[in-house]
Image (cartoon, rainbow, N blue to C red; front, side):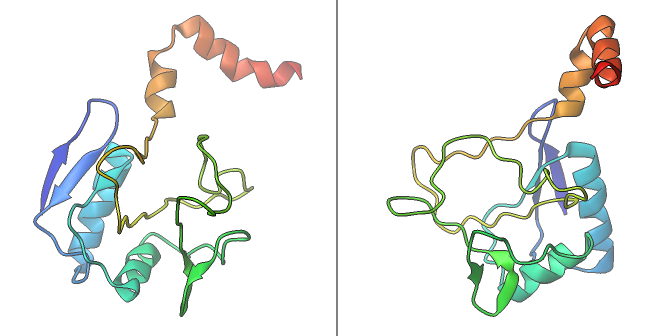
Length: 149
């Protein structure tokens, strides 16, 4: 397994691994890479639904079926997302992968099957790095602002 940082603030690409045949040591290395880099990418993976679910379970209990999106047949914990005309909900806004819940999921696992040549980008942000880059006065304000409401 090879791990390469993508940007200084967020992301790493992991190569030389097949997600259909992971060992417990592989899961551990991937977990540590995720903690360090916040987002990890695997390219050219033809992962089966069984392997996808096993990978998810390695991080903890999968989320129950999504309240809006359909699931992959036979795998109620794997959400099927489609974009394009007629897709619901259709949005170009930032979303938070269920982080609004009282106990949000530890991570999300996306498996892109069809990716357009142009557009359709998925972006991530590192709020820890954004906070750390703030002047101390703003960090202090954010830490105490909830006390005044």
